[in-house]
Image 1 (cartoon, rainbow, N blue to C red):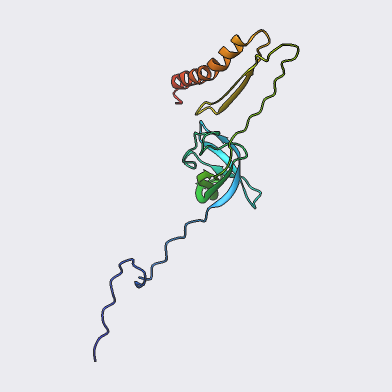
Image 2: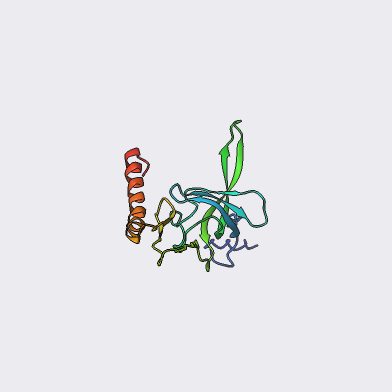
Length: 183
């Protein structure tokens, strides 16, 4: 009698025979949610997932564009609708046992969102013209800064403050963070 032909080698192509090893775990499906809070400097935050009551944590590696805040595309801000990949991690609990926690990875804002919308209302009152000035700027790792500078004694001071305050706040932050070793 003839012996059966040898089994074909596995090549990873469709139609190849399985070696009996368990299939690789399926990648989790992207889910949707809303940002509850996000700290762009620390790159940490929380998402309210659709259909669940428990907030999910965003670790520092969880958002590819994490240090951007609106109005830049890709930024995260309270209320931003996002998609994410849930990932279960295991950690040691205080009692020495293992516990599992689901975190959010690859957090991405959904297309078509405006980002941060700011509105102001100023009134000239009894003056002939309104000399108030507005500053609205993304300060990168700090977040979004808005300020209204009252020009009731003329617009020159308010104009100067609106232009100078945002970059000076960021510069002071970076100087202090560098001195403290956290930047």
